[in-house]
Image 1: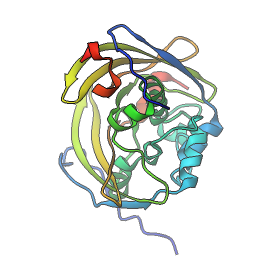
Image 2: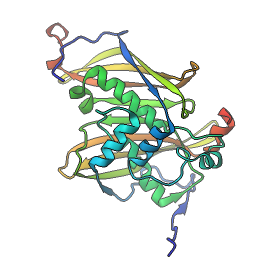
Image 3: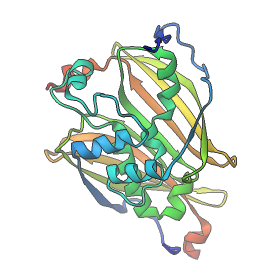
Image 4: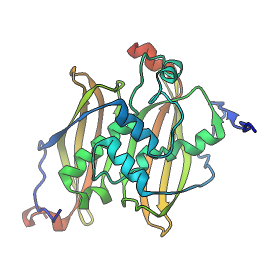
Amino acid sequence: MAEVDDRVELDWDALEVGETFEKFEYLLTQEMIDTYRKGVMDPEASFPTIAHKVDVRQYNAKYTDAGSVNARCAFHCYNPPVAGKRLTVTAWIADKYLRRGKNYIVTEAVSVDEDGKLIDRVITHELKQPSEVGKKWGG
Amino acid sequence: MGRVIRSYDEGDEITPLVKELTQDAINMFEGSAGNTGPSQFTDEHAAKEVLGTEGTVASGRMSLTFAIEMMRRYFGADVFNHTGVVDLRFLRPVRPGDTITFTGKVTGTTREANGSRVSVAIEVKNQRGDTTGVGQGSAIVPNAFLPPEDL
């Protein structure tokens, strides 16, 4: 049976800064960490959560849009996550702004493990007109 | 790695980090969280449709990860993995086949309650010399990692 897509089409003007999404929980596995480390070619890479894009996961679960391009990203390291622990992510809309006629959304997320240990904080600025990349930088 | 006691001075250069991007590496990065569907990072058609580019691009988060690696190597994992911050702006697409070089320079230190925050300017260039990203990072180096004369 086909899944029903009940996501809401993004209305950037109506999007409220401060909107907090439902918490997202997942189990961090050793396989996730190993694959991440291979991908970034760093056997000591400690924050596989970067690749999990948890700051925009809940946004993408609620809204549908034309896609996005990451324009800026800040990452705060607190404690490397451990395989086998469940992580809980709280994400919210931290800001939105218009620059040179283009719409941006800023999401922020904090990850905490099952022991209550703070893992990281990520703040991402996404350009909501991704086709600008092709226009500006060509094929 | 044991505790390294050292000073941090404005103008100090960080050992550069060089990464060669491949589509396989991008696929593993994207797949590490279970994202197996086509995207602008893994599929040329999706890249064309979403971005209007002829090929895939690497997520900016990969560049962020590499900047974090450079900073971790400089400060040490004991310090950076608990107090480190990187804030990077992505200026140009990074594509499979690109070789990107991360450089950093200490821009200053400020006293914190239990140590010093060391700030670093970060720049990323591709093999053509184009800047693909700029930003800054920092870490709070605990007093125990600083020489007595710096306290």
